Length: 278
Image (cartoon, rainbow, N blue to C red; front, side, top):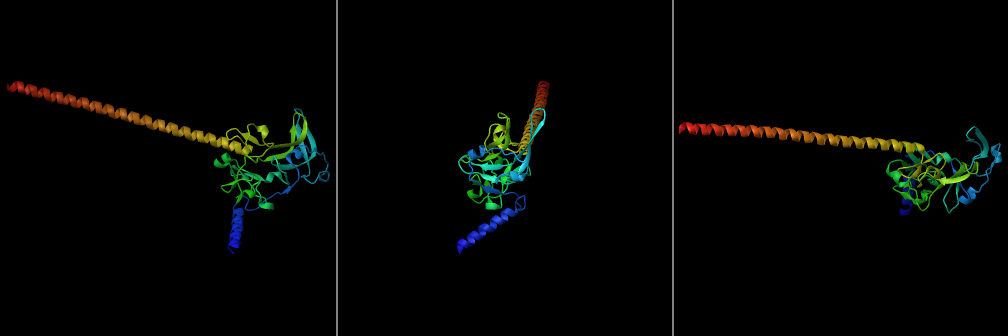
């Protein structure tokens, strides 16, 4: 009976948590498990298409891709495919790659899919610490694609990094190919390591949305201004203390000098009085 009550409480708490998310418990998109590994996906041939019917099962349909060659936009009709992978395990196919996380309230927010209640997006510890990333509440590591749940948030796992695999232009081959690059929150040193439009945050050294990186940079600038303001304020206060101290000392010196003159005059008058009496 106690076990039953425990599980009922656990389920109710999870439902309550879902209803408190920025999406008010409404989730979009879905995913499917596949037998593909990341190497399999990188070797998938790009499929040209005219309609959605020309595309395979693990595809979001026929999509228009454009590439600027320096003079003109080159257009391609290709089957859109997006996967999320780990190095040594099978990948999942994302039916809607844009919905596994959203940018909201100037942070990245990882969404839990209704299906399997799994959170694909993960926050790096640095981004979580700087309030740049959160996820729906995880109860156990099984709720996170990264297999790491800390402080009710899915955190990137250095031993289990995540990758996004999708069509991307390869300059060396001068054609679009399936490319697997690091998902947001993963460690990086330059932009090319990160998934498509995302960038490598130079300060935190993790892949992130450009909007979040810009916000982090702006907030850091404001922090610098605040720090500069504090330093200037401290300098002004110290300067005032020094000036007041010098003023007090000068007043004390003048008062002491005046007192010395008064005492000298009193002594001189006393000597003159003695001379007169003698």
